[in-house]
Amino acid sequence: MKRKAFITASCLAVSGLIVATAWAQQRPDPEALKAKEFFGTAGIPEDRWTEGETFVPHVAPAPHFNATLLYYPGTEELQSDEVRVTFMGSTYYPNQSQSGMSILVELGNGDRFVFDLGIGSLRNYNSFSIPFNSINHVFFSHLHMDHMSDLPYFLMFRPIQGGWTPLHIYGPSGAEKQYGIGHMVEHMMKMTAWHRDSFNAWPIGEGYDPVVHEFDYMDEGGVVYDRNGVKIIHWPTSHTKDGATSYRLDWKGRSLCYTGDNRPNSLTIKHCQGVDMLISEVQNAAVSLSSQALGMPPAMAAYTIDTSHTPGYGLGYICKKAQPKVCVATHYSYDDIFNNETVAQVRHHWKGAFAFGAPDLVTFNVHGDGKVWWREGVAAESSQTPRPAFDAPLITFPAPRHQVYDVINETIEANEIPPEKWYPEGHKPELVREWPLTKDIQIPNPFARPSE
Ligand SMILES: [Zn+2]
Ligand SMILES: [Zn+2]
Image (cartoon, rainbow, N blue to C red; front, side, top):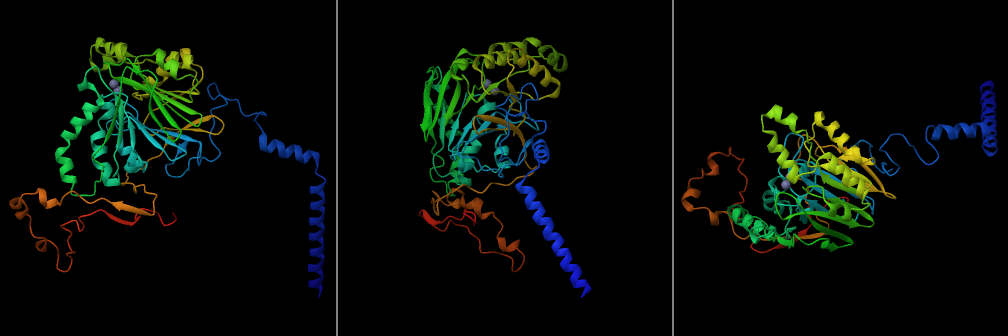
């Protein structure tokens, strides 16, 4: 009984407290309000923070990011008007952390564009689980191998990841036909004759029928792509030989320029006014230091840079004149010893936001009301072939053009050891020695995830 009374009293006390709290909530204590406000905003001026020299107000992470300093691929859905730019390659001499130039541009409408496909960059596409069949448009700035040598592999293996439609390849003509991108692709197809005929025993569809969009390298400001609200223009640029080009992409008020390799160029200033990202090559121009270490005559490096590339001072000048939201330096050997020097050179002219498009996997987002942010991309040491990207509920597997053993000599085939000899008793599966269909087959999409 006593116990019951105690409980009743406690209940009354608790309800009294609740009533008192509710009353207090109705009549807030001005001091408490002030404290609460301070807790939520301490250190942040009314508009936003202002720390730093280059973190101007438009440099900001988006609220939907999972992390501010790192980008974990596959964990963030792009907003409908957002752009993500990932450096899948960022240099000219590949090393452990840098591949040949390649930039992946992803738009919130699902479109993907690739600019250049330099040596080694494809391993980063795989690391980021970007299925090859989600890339249908590749633009080349010029035909140096540090910008295009992964193309043959990409074209040959794209159908294996479901790339059964033609790949669209864009690039400049040259001063002579033999220097244009059309000539290069035509002869790349010849180079890959053996590969194609062997893989034609698998579903390829039109995967080995690239469509080349060769444009006049001298044309300035011409539109090379205009679809789905995305417009890409180009202009000629000076780099080792006629037939190098720079690009600008526009979509939903977002914009970015990619110069490719070149000398600082007035047309870049003209065509890249106020873009969100001005991506340019940059070279560390410490020629005397490199020549001491490498024994290379300084004239070699100086001649290369002074005829064909952009030192930090040049990039700073371009950015000062074009006033992008962020000035991005890539095609750059990202070495600690030179980075500060390069930044100092860029800073001589350019005081706004600056970032390296290097090493590989650095990722930029253009988002919100005109904000830009960049992070280090995270990739696992190992990776596996990504799941092909197919949206439709039904997909059509193209029929192979021939069977494997149609193109293997019978006597060579006869040398194969019969599988019965090496499969343990009872372990021999039913072997698939022939593709079971001679026509295309439409089936429910096996690549769709269960939730889709
Ligand atoms: Zn290059
Ligand atoms: Zn080049």
